[in-house]
Image 1 (cartoon, rainbow, N blue to C red):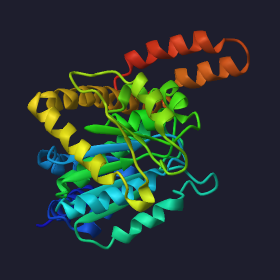
Image 2 (cartoon, rainbow, N blue to C red):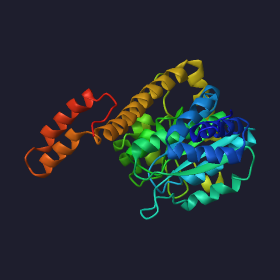
Image 3 (cartoon, one colour):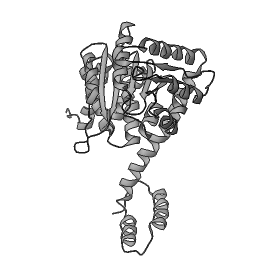
Image 4 (cartoon, rainbow, N blue to C red):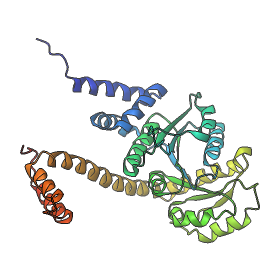
Amino acid sequence: MKYAPTPFCRDRALVGELASRVLKGDHRALGKAISIIEGGGPARRKLIQEIYPRTGNAFTIGITGPTGTGKSTLVNKAIEEYRKRGRKVGVLAIDPSSPLTGGALLGDRLRMMDHSLEREVYIRSMASRGDVGGLARAARNTIRLLDAAGMDVVIVETVGAGQTEVQVATAVDATVVVLMPQLGDEIQAFKAGFNEIGDIFVVNKADITNPAKTIFNIASGVEEKNGWRPPVLKTVAPKGTGVVALVDALEKFGKFLEERGLREGRMRQRLEAELMEAAFSDFCDEAANRLKGEKSWRLILGQVSKKELDPETAAGRLVKIIGKLDGTPNA
């Protein structure tokens, strides 16, 4: 007698087939796979299991910095330059979320879409939704998908200054911090932690005013890291001015990491941070679901709401209860 496969088995089979198509560079499959990554759950885990052995080949770049500095235009020109050099390029654009729909606001990103029909270019926008941890996890796994799909270079562009940008940018091999002349952006960027993560600094919109002061301020603040002193470059993105030098600097930095044996070490550091973050996130979700099935949860919640117990003491008791959970909730 034959048994029909369960929905879970069917889902696993479908995800396996999807992963196979991603590994062949199928753009439609890649789009569906990224949606699974954003959705989370068992399908995401199965998908990453399938493609992970084929990752680690792409050179990954984070483009970050304050809003309004022309990052999207710069990315657009960088795509053009990498294509001239025969490289396949994947782009993940992190957008602020619409407060009403939660969707990504494309804005100037639309100019990038000129490349979206090219077989060797794949561009995806991802909404931040205000969830830094969840966004970082989805971004890392999307980078892996683009890598596994055969992209030589993967560029992650973030929305602007803030914790999201610092966290997402540290998921890549090289981080480019984009600023603009004499608007005080360089000081704010350094306060936001960009000085610590920047491998290359770019002063864009260098035709607005003389960028010498801004370049000097940045160059005075950067520090040498493992023998690499971050260069400070100037660009005029709409005209493509300085873009060749930027890509040259990125390739030089990539060779520097390989020759010094630093790329693997940096990757291990990123993996360590990622594993801890993902494990804690999954543990919190699982613990919360199991805890809410316990009588003690409802009892303590009631005591706190009646002012019979304070939240701090209640939290301490809940930690002890979580430690005793055996996976079988007490109704």
